[in-house]
Image (tube, rainbow, N blue to C red; front, side, top):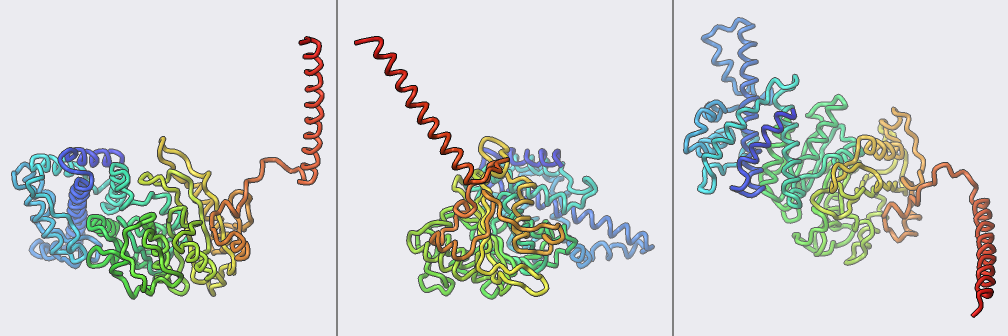
Length: 518
């Protein structure tokens, strides 16, 4: 896989200098997607041919088998018209109109596959695009085959490559990259906490679709099927919406991201959807948003015009089904802010007993921003839920302080390790009493400096401020088993002894100075 990634990253370098990062991201990922669908199509076509010949199908009838569009659809493979197949394009890579041919190929694929309608990029034949460089790009991508690698199918290989590219482009774009990409370990924490085995999964600001991909991986890892979850999402940025559509298509995830991109606050594309699971990483502290004071979503208070944090939370809470749960990434200020009515909104949400857990994350997880972040988790029903037999946690909230977790991968970026994620998620599941916790033999207990289960009265005493450090306290000193009363008595005696020694030394110094005379 490393050699494939290295080859593909050269494709980005081919276009550096002739366009900005956002543009070459669209170009490279668009070409990679085109190569993938062609490889996957060829792979399936070879299988169909082999199966037909094995069954003794006459050569005269073979064509009908090879051109059965429904067969490809049932196998989760996109139909690729002849003019859009990679070998046709590669043969013309040095032609002056290669960009026009690629645009036509994108059109043909979208016309042949309803799921891709309006999704693929078409900007390869423009005055601003160096057709000679584009031809070289086609040649480089052509050298990267997605089939027959490590025994994986083309979809699995490209899925990994696509995620690698999203991560790498996010690094390259810096702050702008954060608009479409959430670091994988953070997404993993959300998914491992919520355990979306089956049901409707929703993300109101889905970026490039990473939450959905991780949810799908969770389902498959637990012997489920892709069809066990139904995906609903929305994204306001056109380019990012297209990336998400391609990401879902590559991973074979059926999803509804709306007919086009749109602002969730201005135009909710899924007004009737009630979700079982919501995962979201809204833009931090967004000040420019479509605010309507009379919006029925503001059940717990009207969010301030200058910050959409509590608008996102209330939209998400309104989307939850009666037994739904949600995990949301927010800036740390959301846990303690009081300006512009935010404190009152937070208090109302807490008093409604919707908050299950708040996690303080370590710094430097998000390369796109230095703003400290936290995770909020919600559940519409914190009590016993029938067959799920969850522990009754009504009137309680779990606080986890993970600020000291993680490992630095370079001078500026930290990642949560698998061990960190397992500890965080395991603590939550033990607290909730989930089936996975019972199977693993996990039992919850407060740990000083790390986790604490607080009652509603405790939270009220802290004026509904949800900063975990207030509740978990400092960590216990390693190996310190001395009773507190004995420790205080010992330290007091040591202090008084120090005072006496100080007085003795002061007197000795005075006596020596007196001997020296004036």
